Length: 220
Image (cartoon, rainbow, N blue to C red; front, side, top):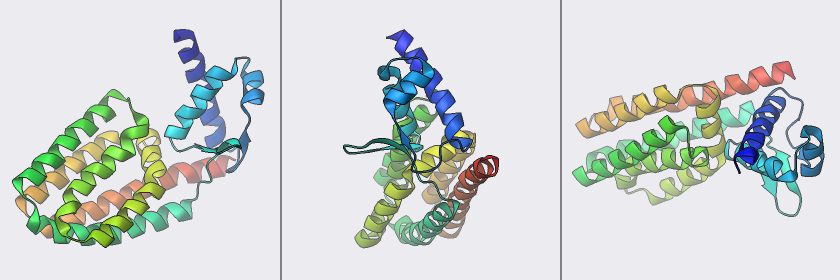
């Protein structure tokens, strides 16, 4: 099993560089048999590597068709994250006056789990889930179910970009610090400063991953 893990990690690391380097364009099919031959391994480590890259947002599986590189767009990132700013600051502004001690404790509990997953480097595929769960814990008391549903849809679309931001921009520590600051400002009931920090937090995330993609496009 350890041998497979080592081979899978080697394949994932090399394939990741090839994708980000532009060798495989967005929407390219990644045939497991061809990759196994290319890397001189069986299909098992190739499959594991592709699942790793799927969790990072670089690969997606289509039913009955196999694995494909994800279509990544700088314009899409900026549009999605601009929408997040509009909707999330709106619900946060309504939520903060309604936050109870139990709500804040719940958010803090999620944040501890999130920090532990980030610090250990494990559960990469769950990072965007933890991120959304923390934000949602702060937004839920807003009493705006339709807006919350729209935010959930945006999270699904931007989840892979959030994982990529944390994996590739090396800004995990910055994200952790800002989450703790958001929680503390919300605890203080400071609506304006909390919303201002949230806007900066989301916009910085967008620019971080946009920079990674623009660099990969230039090198393609």
